[in-house]
Length: 294
Length: 199
Image (cartoon, rainbow over all chains, first blue to last red; front, side, top):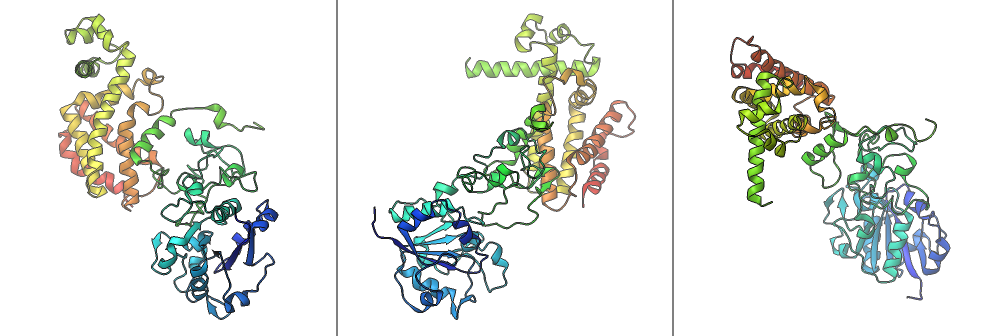
């Protein structure tokens, strides 16, 4: 194990700072700070000011980028492109923190010229910054799950080889769908979506727009704040870790004559409908009534 | 059981279903007995039970057999690279063609399955036994909406319009009320259905 702290630069592009805030929810932040030090972080007190970062040429081990980027977007008077170029050449790894930095996300529509992620504009790969692509890891999510970011940083620190998917996301966290580990799976299996937002009962895929069956992430394996997830608490997955985020009409399942337009990942339409026809024949009282106060 | 023997048994099962189908369609489900079916196939009653344990099971298997047959025909149409309007015409065409060349199949659907629901309550809950057919109709609708040709609506309101119309025409033909052959109605009926379902 390395003894010295890794120097981390948290650079904010066109962003709401949601990832910086989500990071603060990491429950073992003090231990983290024993292993890493921030050259600069937008919220946590750090050694240098943003002006120092821009004007000086500091040593940096990991460059974290939050938010969408655009050649037009400046920090002080310097384009964020130039700051990324300077520090990415020194850094051992670059991590795009959140969906905006990875794919453009919400701030893709910010009005800045060509606002996008570092390597991807939604799912289209970009030519800019191709020279640093081999060093980049994408941690998508709106916001990022703090444990996913921190565990990735620890892996970098310990020189552990990180297997990535085609969008540079660590497979350890993104090879699964959010559906994996959902506590509503029984309702999903029998196609029962008698859900009201915030309630325990019902699957939200069939009517309420849940994107978990085709969204990559570990939300239901590594719980948020160590206790919960959107789907567990009664809100549908909005697909926030995908290049396609944000879609519109998030609270409704888009259907064509009653058939969901987007099916669980890798499932063919014909087989899905065959299975649906069979499961619809079940009539399970236990799952169709309230679990409490019935 | 060897593959050869298994496929022989399957073939024999199909022959029994075909024989039973014709009897059910002509004499009615309740008036047809297992010995009647055995006799028409020149089989012993005991041997018949080696293939189907009861008349109700035979009735279910026939239903699945017809659904699979029609489902496969519709799948061929669904997999063609043609517009929904053209698919509509082809579905109407194949349905009437089957009604003319194998009238016992559509008759069974209308006169046995839809008229004697009590027989199918246990083994064929919901749409399990007609799944293959209904799945293809669903795909036809879904792809029609996705292509921007059909109007999005509740599945059953569209399904009822389509199948109710076709079933009604075959029923009228069976009652000898239609003045013309079914295939002479294909143009008008597919035009009407497409017009009713399109945007």
